[in-house]
Length: 399
Image (cartoon, rainbow, N blue to C red; front, top):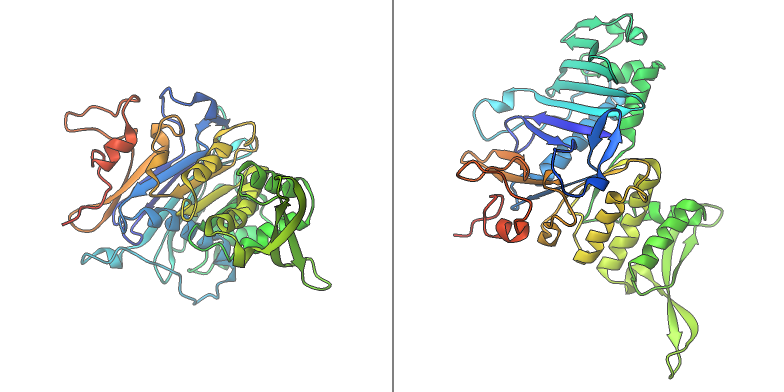
């Protein structure tokens, strides 16, 4: 499970920013707090902000770290790294991008990070903390110099010279069957990023899950039923001699003059269903996948094309620890102010992005916010109204 994520010098973010999933000592919605590895963690975080304020870049920075970790083993020794530093001042473009993430695997909390530019990994580090023990350094890399704990990270011993400047040490050791390193890459592989604006790249994933006719398929169909989308089933056409889905049709009731159901008629999903219905079908697979396997699901513009009640339904599934028994987490960006209600989300789950006078983005949570007198936001405030009125910043200003 994700504990927190810190990044610096990525796209619109010049300075260090941290998105935390640690529960603050506040009273609202206590039954949604997940206890893992001695940590009290949140199942959902939502980011608000004006267009171009940086909210998408928070999620993309997390995706960029994941992609760098998982794709490092594929790089040739001289191949360039993807780097997108802040470029609206005279110095940041020449500085490295930095990432650090804390997450829980089993009984261990890992703290892993690295700095990189387009040419090389500048530094890399890995620490582990077990319950009741202090944090221990597993390895520290500065350029081509390595400090490795023989007792805690023996799998990395002797592999320093085999690590090209542009590759991550933890990825190389994982490729060479290091058990700790492999568990770290496995955790990153279970972090899923999706765009809420275009689901065609993963709609086939949902349809393939339905074809399996297992517990996950039943959960997807149950989600369709509970959201009252107007269809009573879904038919999936397969490619000949293949398990890959080709297309889908939704099944609708046919009624007689007295309103009795007398049959069913199918319609091509892509042609006949609304954009919102297609969006639910597309995103249902990743949602159920996350809930069934305890994944971190990251969605930019989750609410795009969805009725506010449907977005609220998705959030409620992650907030309900009976439905979300495996410890899944949902991180998303939105403009839907209907969710700014402390009946649905806690103050520590609501985040804002805003740009300063130099067009650099900042990130802060509602629970951290202080007004002009230094007072915190009370839990009896009308959060949505205050946000629209500009009380917390992070809204567009029209000239």
